[in-house]
Amino acid sequence: MPFNSYVKMESIEPGLLAGPQSQLAQLIGTDAFWVEAPVPLDRLDWIEIPGVNGFQGERGSAVTVTQTTGAAPIVRKGTILRLLPELDTLGTQARVLIEIEDPLLLKEGGAPGLPLLVGAFVKLEIQGKELDHVVKVPRVALRDGDHVWVMTPDDTLEVRPVTIVWREPDSVFVSEGLTDGERVITSRLATPEPGMKLRLPGQETASSDAAKAPGAAAEAEAAPEAKEATP
Image (cartoon, rainbow, N blue to C red):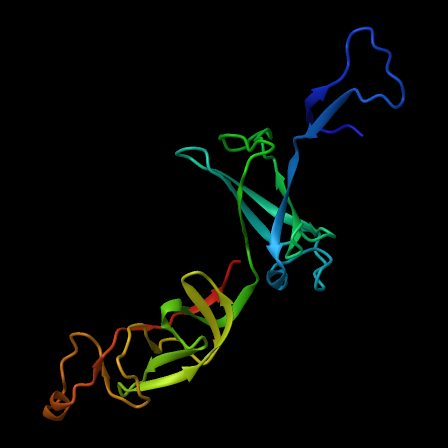
């Protein structure tokens, strides 16, 4: 079947007799390139892979492919084609096959730019499944692994357990235990006690009684609602 390609290697010379089993050349298709990518086993549930976890689409999660080449990186879009049947050599990560369409920018009407070449080292960002009704919290706000300090409406401390569904280097996504707009304390408190009075840095006391017992100064952030995370 004819296909668009370029010649990687040729093994033929003038006068050579070619037989049915002769290898004359190696061709590389130019319509799309494939990339094998390792994925931690505990992340497979978070991406869409054809034929895995009930996902029936022909193409899975979208992938952003980036190659660093000096000042201007090369960026392409790809999709997950399938899950490969073997783990990596250490047996700790699965492998997925990603397809990148028109890597050499040969299609008519395509945007100008540098081609993505075979053998290049690339960075892959796989789009994860959308998470509904979760709150993004700075990682520094976690206490004892799965608790946060909340500044209540009456400016007191509440220690609250939370359910973490996704972790990133600088933040986590919480599905239970926080609601949109609540104040999460990110600073340290010398002797935290549930119910103790808190005040924000620079907050003026409202009465003479408050002036006598102003409470511990605490830095707090409003918990914004987040709707998706990317592995």
